[in-house]
Length: 62
Image: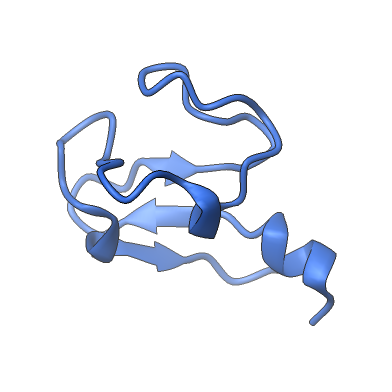
């Protein structure tokens, strides 16, 4: 997998299924589009259910 594909990978909350898409960013946390999941601030949490980053799973690139 290329670095670009890794940086564009989407992650889904394992609790509420909210998807973090780096092409969209996160309006709640004021994260602009283009920020990869691994570059989110350490304190970033699910904007829907407030779960920590550790609860997110990478979605398969289908």
